[in-house]
Amino acid sequence: MSEWRDFNGFVQRSPYDNFIHEMPLLFKIFTFIIVTFAALMIIRSVRNWIRSEVSGGSGDSSTKPSYFVTFEIDGGNRLELHVMDQEYGLITEGDRGELSYQGSRFKGFDRILKTE
Image (tube, rainbow, N blue to C red; front, top):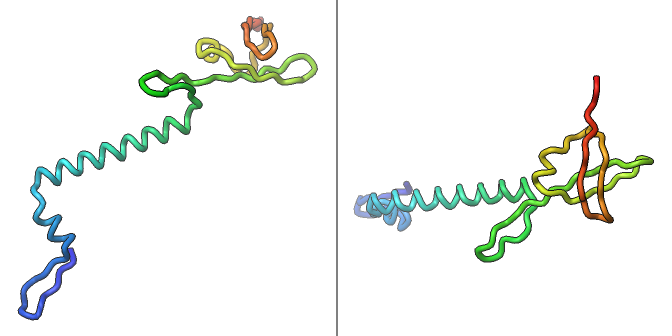
């Protein structure tokens, strides 16, 4: 707190310190809760924005992440295709198999199981 004594010896506070000092306790608690909630929402939003690419979401509609997989086809050429989330979770790096696609549209991937 910034305090000083005036010419008569009375302790004086800055206007900001007076405001904080005279604020009711419930108002201080309520303000703390609101500020904490806002900070957590900002952190959560930034974290989600960094982790995923989303589309949609205007108004009350939902958002949906986009998933892409890069396939290496004959001759070493690479092809990046948009896949559904169910397919994305099943395809891992190093998988070999038969890719079905039409233009830039992913149709399916049949994995060839490794025999040892």
